[in-house]
Structure formats: C-alpha cells, structure tokens
Image 1: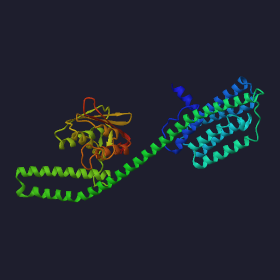
Image 2: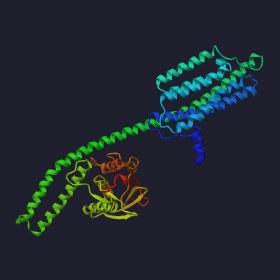
Image 3: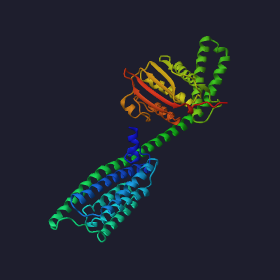
Length: 441
C-alpha cells in the first residue's frame, strides 16, 4: 500500500487532498489536479488518434500528432515528483502550466483540420479552468492567447480529409466528433471544477481559522493585561493586611486561643491570595521577587493537587502515575492554574472524586483528569476552548477551559476532552517536556 501511494504521488495522482495552508499551497493542489487532467488528456488523445486513423479511416500524420502527448507525458513525469517536494506554487507557474496545455492542443488541431476540427471547442475548457484558478490578469491573458490560437487555426492548418465523398457522411462524422467533444468537456469540467472549488473552500476555511486564532490571542492579551494590572493593585492592600495581622498577634487582646486560631486562618488565606497574585504576575512576565520554583513532574502534580484539595476538602483527588522516571521541570504558575481550573470545573459539574493520571511517552508529559461529575454538554465538546462557552449561566463563565486550551497551545501542547462511558468527564493533556525542562546548572 505504501508503494502504491508513493507511485501515485510520483505520477501526480495523489496529494490533491493535502491540507490547504495558504493561497500558494492551494495552487499546489490545483496544479496536481491539472497534472491529472493532463494524464486524462493524453489517454483521450491516444484513443482519438487510434479511432480516427484505424477505426474511421481518417488519414492523419500520426507521428507528428504523437509529439504532443509525448511532451505532456515527459512534462508530468518531471514536474509531479518535484511538485510533491514543494510547499507553494505561484500564479505565474500555474499560468505557464495552462499555456503548455493550450500549446499542445493548438499543435494537434493544426495537424488535423484547425478550427474546422470538431474538437476545437476544447479551448473553452482551458479558458474555464483559467477563470477558476488564475487571477483576473492571468485569466484575461489566457483568454487572449486561446483566442489568438483559435483565430490562427482558421487560416493556418493542415486540412482534415474525412472518408467518403458524400457531404452527408462528412457532416455525420463532424457531428459525432462534436458530441464526443461536448461529453468529454462537460465531464472534465464538472469533475475538476468541483475539486478546484473544494481547494478554494479549504483555503478559505484555513484563513477563517487563522482569523479565529488571532481573535483568541488578542482576547488572551487583553485578559493578561487586565489580570496583571489587578494583581499589581492587589499587592499593596495584601501587604497592608499582612502587617496588620502581624500586629494583632502581638496585642494582648488577641491572645485568646480562638482569636489566635482565626488570625492564623486569616493569615493562611492571605498567603494563598498573595501566591495567586504572584502566579498571575509571573505568568504575565512581571515577577514579585520570587524566583520560579524548580520541581519535578511527580512533585509538581502532587503539590498542585494537595494545595487545591486543602481549599476543597469535599472533593477527593487520587493520583496515579506510570512515570518510569521523574523529570526535573520548572513549575510554571500558568500550568498550575490550568490544573486548578480543571479541578474547579469538575467540582462545579458535581464531581466528588477526581483521578489524576500521569505518564511520560515519547518525550511528552501525558496527564489525564477523570471525574465522576455530570460530564460535558455536547455544545461544549464541539467547540472546546472557545471563550464564554459554559453552562453556569453567569457573566464571565466559560473562561476556565478557554485559558486551559490556550495555555497548552502556548506551551506547544494539546487538549482533548470527552464524556466517560459510565458518567463523568475525561480531559487528556499532552505537553512537550522540553517546554518545562529545568536547565542544568
């Protein structure tokens, strides 16, 4: 199967379904379609020459006529392998390919009756293909070239002598040729124009996807600026509250054990708020004096789960891993927030038990989060990661998964989500360890 696929690509019979990434890559697929059309044209030319010469008894300069299909075959054999190695084809190259086909058709019509040949309307197919594939300038140039060739064939050509002296016989053969020409032209146009239209639609879809990604990136930047600004503003009042709590601990009025316990709890929550602010600023590139923490995969996941569970004791997180080794990483605060957002979503979906699986496969950190909640609604799964897609029904909801998906994209990772068969949700994260690797000192 691999050998057959390679042969098809080498002959230019494959690759036209490859993803479209730009206007030039769409031209690659379109040129591959033209190569396929050229193979069909060669086959049709050989059949037509054989039928006319040996079936109908029309005297033709067979050797000269075979020059055109031979040139087209050689051109395909040279251009198709080179085309599979290229990522882009310009409009000028596409125009040149169509000109070669026009030249081959002109040569064959010149040797077989010129404009009086019933296959002369095949020029129209070249014009239609040019109108679909080329820019307006190149399309009009192609029309001018084909019109000049058609007009020239009305004056300079080798007469086509049809068998039979009666005019009726000659007219009958001419009408049969016109019918074959019409059927051939219509079939080829429908087949290839629909494929070419598919190429253009695929290109438009890719451009729409790029615009969507640009809008999402702009949204992330705006959110990052807002979050970092709020974090800077919160730094001063949090520091003031920390000083006040320190003063209270030294006051005789607050030495009551219950009050002291409350102050300790307040200090713990205050420290947690400061850690959150620090994480936001670090993610935005503005560090509040703390250096990024060096850790390992197992320690990072364990600490992240433990810190979250302290604030949510009603939900149990069970950790399981298949780590043969424990790679050293830099504990990225943004990634810590990713897991917190996952745990928060699971809890808000009614989960009371969360499983956290981890493994390293082919240099990628694979983490799977399973829960026993209500799972994802279909409209969330179909458009995973779009902002404000949520079932919570409040302003600002739906940003958790949006941030999750985009943070993973920024780090070069991927996110997949699905509903579990027995109920609950499953989220699979894949992240290159190189994106988190701790530098050796």
